[in-house]
Image 1: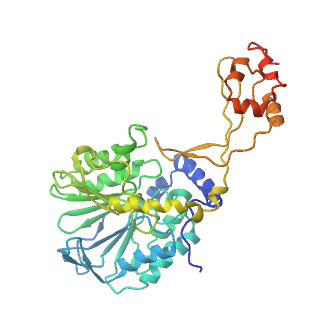
Image 2: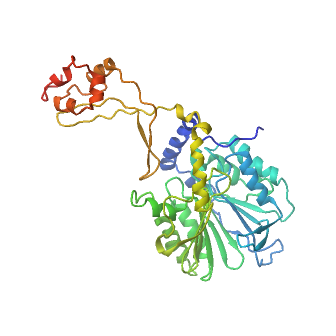
Image 3: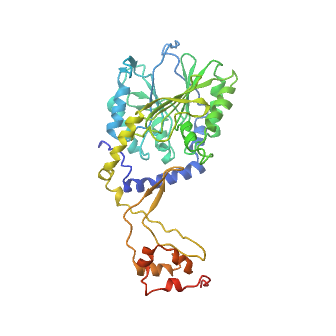
Length: 444
């Protein structure tokens, strides 16, 4: 099988090819939620106990690996897979302190395991093969892998995701024992790891809520929780909640933390670590009480910047403690945008066109101009200004009087508001029909 290249995000053909997948997934997610079918198929799903060894003796420690936003291309995915496959890694921090680490007994995939949209072939080519190459076989006790779906995993209604991760199969040398798109792991030393499936609309379905209520009933009062979610809601709420409170909010996380996990029969557990991907960089925020909110989307997808909009302080007193890449490095990398046209030549072949109907006093119409505004997010308009089209006077005059494109009424005041250069291009001084049309002319 051919090794996959990185996704060409600025290729018009790539964007058009996967637009139907996005549209269908939105409709399916709202009208035919596959998580409801999962709950019916596996009504007895329970907690995965990772707190004991094969001899049923309690473990004193456990190593966890976390990978989010992988499956974009062979090279980057294999680079990450080969790191988590090593039996031991010795790491050195910025202060020169050496930290020996072991391969995790549990590998958690934090969402978006495939790009740009899922299929059985694409999962195999971009995700499974790199991990199989990095670690094709393991001795007992075998490490286990668990996964939560991100928005890109949802673009086929979780069909390929469920086939890979919820069938008790293998990903390379890792077992995949989970049976649903969400899970709960009991860890040593009174720790738990909760993996949620928030679908495309940051939504928790009722069977998932019931499942986590049963999990909370098993937690002791002193238990602590690592809560994994596919999106860093704390970042999105801080940046975009003022634009759309229904989409960008932390209410689902608070509901899960305060109304479910903390209200078990034994008083439940408290969330100490929030862990997510989706943004392809690393950020760690910490509260005065020591709680952590970590964004770790460095699984191999295209790098996202850490400079720009200010996220140094979030709600509830969380402050930024670490980021990778550092802000100065992130800002320096953006200078590569100067060669954007060289790296993405097909994107510049697009010609943005739109035809707004302006209605100043008396009515009127504007011609099509060569400018298009793409909205990448709330409050983030980006203007794409290609070469403007040539204004052809005869075409424009016909369009003014054609009922498909414009109202039949064009007033003298509006014609006078047209820019001088545009009026000269539309009609010559000898052709003054625009000015001669009265403001109260009836539309036939």
